[in-house]
Image (tube, rainbow, N blue to C red; front, side):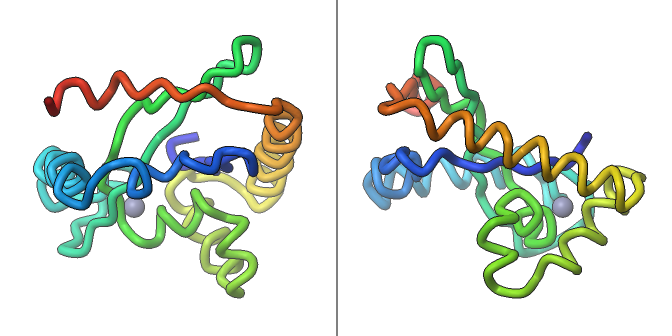
Length: 142
Ligand SMILES: [Zn+2]
């Protein structure tokens, strides 16, 4: 799937880069992503003047390592899909499901299946008591 859900484990208190970096540092990381995007969502390709920065994490469950893989610039619609838990709470799921199906060219059944898999991965990752953060991605900015 080109666009998929990315549910962050509940125990990852510091997984939001904005809470780790100073505002000035975060600004550098964010702006680099915007520059790479060139005015288009890096997931669906839609041209937009209002890009949002999104942190992509990879999870190594065996070693309990949560690694920052990328910071991408994406549109609001894709961001709503990625953080589906929050979107469901604010009543935006129908819109998010439509965007998911459009971007991935899939059916509602496939949307439900992907959501089930994401929830299952989330449940499993929540069993890890403590994630170690790998922020080596940020080295290129220093
Ligand atoms: Zn998008």
